[in-house]
Image (cartoon, rainbow, N blue to C red):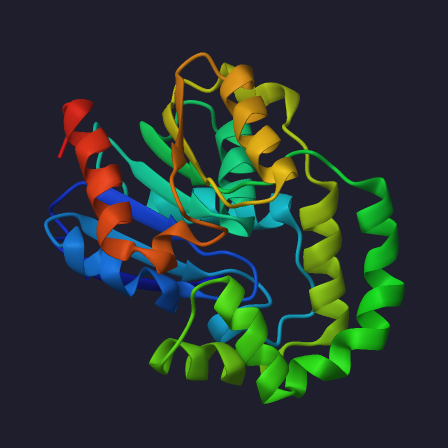
Length: 252
């Protein structure tokens, strides 16, 4: 089961937020405050947050569980919004493929959809050598900086990193590196906003374009001077971009 937190106005439109790998639901603190008129829901995916000690993780299993989370909380006829970052954005793509008519609007931020066979094959040997570094606070601070995590959020990030199991982290990274766009994705009726940072790796930029190419009702935008971690780097700008897009789509 997933750990679920709920905020805002439970009579408002349902907004579900899906965190990235290595972080958890706390990354959406700014968003749930900004969209307080909505019924905001955050979750901790297996291997993260309250479920950091989970034994296994798959993108598909997470998507199936999230469909249940949505169905239990959705009001009939309500327009549902789901926002995902990185690993959470991959889960969101899978969710849209499994339930093509469930979600009205989706924001896919920095989702890798170009599988790397070499990267996938190197996960286990490399991680077995480097996993002890995760416990090193200096190394964790360097990793956190690449995701724009600092201050109190870093302490939360580091605490959860200390608890993460090596076997689960391997599963998460293998799922991440091998993920590709499901064939059913193009059948989704969801209206989609795809975002990526100007300073992200080339494979992430190509992934964003591929997502746009595979869905007829999508809009792809690049965020200037941002790397991997748009919602954490400039939460105010992220909220404005999402909010403006939602308003343009005639909903909130």
